[in-house]
Length: 140
Image 1 (tube, one colour):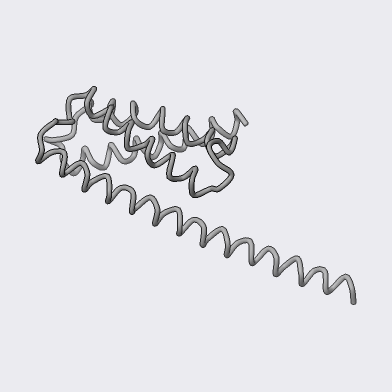
Image 2: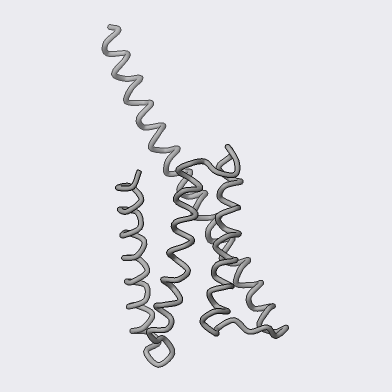
């Protein structure tokens, strides 16, 4: 399990690094190293929490409940990380923007989970089809 966690962690950190590089090239005057620290400080606990939540099937046997727990934890860590790094403001206008961003984040993640489920279902159907064809060939 450690090898699987480490591989997943390295992949996630690579994605964060590439995202930071792209964002810093697009908005070179707005993105600085403090943003990379913020991204890493959010990714590490969220990745750790989500990996073990799914691997150990914590909180529930139903995958969608685990997914919602991970999404809620991600939003909480993102908000706390923003507070620690000074990018979260406690003004009404900012809180409305955070709520809208959280809603959009949740919708994107749910969409990504649905797409992943469809891809997994298609792959399982292909495997089942190949197995049934192989079994038919062995019976005849």
